[in-house]
Image (cartoon, rainbow over all chains, first blue to last red; front, side):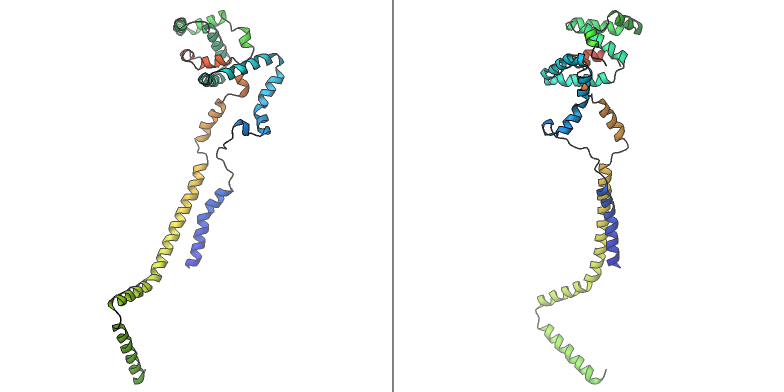
Length: 147
Length: 116
């Protein structure tokens, strides 16, 4: 009897493990550094950028300039820029216009002037903000990158 | 069993007892232990075998189920990973705006004027 029970128990015990082995791996795949990627993988990653470059001849100079500025940025500032980019991607077109306008308005200000500007901005009503944005449109050059 | 058989049996037993008397107490104790172990062994081994089989079954089941639950995404996982994936900026977005502008968006100044 024991001779029959043991194989049955063993088969029952191994069945979940066997079925687990049959399932495809769902764990996150670890990919290597860029230099170790295959050419096909690099092409797949760069494809959106290539499409953007090819379809916007007038933007190529600006894209190249921005790419060079990304490269020249200190590491900590680049990290901040990445966080800002994530914030940017969640903004509506109106919010983006507001952000651009505020950036360009505050860009040339020193620390105290920025502080005063922000204090005034936060006291404005939505209508006053809208009026200010109309009076201070985003420079066309800054808007040109918007698709 | 006739009288001769009884006599033979008694003689054999007497010889066996005489042989045992000739053994040292230590050897006799060892023999007694081995005899008892031999008599117990079959039943004990059978009992242990079933326990080992049951324990092995439980352990293998736990291992197999644990491995499956450990690697399969939990019901919460898609909700947490999807926003992260969508939160990752695309390559093209990097060149849409000045990198200094993106850095400003993450600055304390820009946080104060929450536009979202």
